[in-house]
Image (cartoon, rainbow, N blue to C red):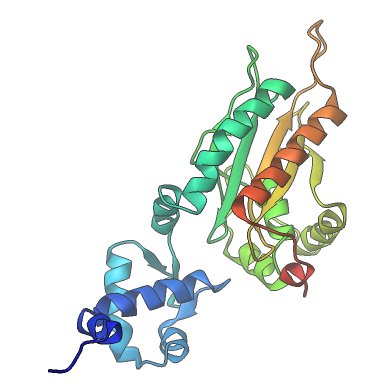
Length: 270
């Protein structure tokens, strides 16, 4: 009687349809822009007809979106939602929240984390200032790309081609002005050299936005630690602007370490 090897067992329990779907999701996750059905078929060495039904199912289940204009496929926010409940991004947020609370208690300033999905800049975690007042953004809020520190830093620490794709896909948030592409890309170059963004809020008066990148293992900004800094003028003694900047910069560095991330010049070149 022949002895079955582990490879034989693995082959017996393969699920080709499931593997096909996972191949599609992994391919879309690795691309900075949407892919056509033909692009996907060629990348996976399959015929367009072979993947049509799988793509239709993924679109119906809202794991993948399809643009009506050019019939291109990309990952949806449903994948983002699932990722929050599962490592590594979910674990990052779980780890980040107590660290953020500790820093906000020291700084007496609010903090939020923002991520990018298909050109949208989404707030995925938010912690209030411990004082009686502060400025925070609700989790799930969609904010601007070019007029926020979070959006700028997320784009700055991506390959140039990916930043341009983000810009092309981006749908302007409520109140966000039209984006000057040339000025936007020039500002990204400046942010890369500086390593972070400091800017007066483009949304409200009296707020200075601080934004620091958190890097993934490939050297890309996976999320951004942002602080809408408000200067106190009463008698309460709290850290000044420079001290707050150090606190949030250190927080971003610690989160990068927790995520196993690193800053790679190659990841943002081009």
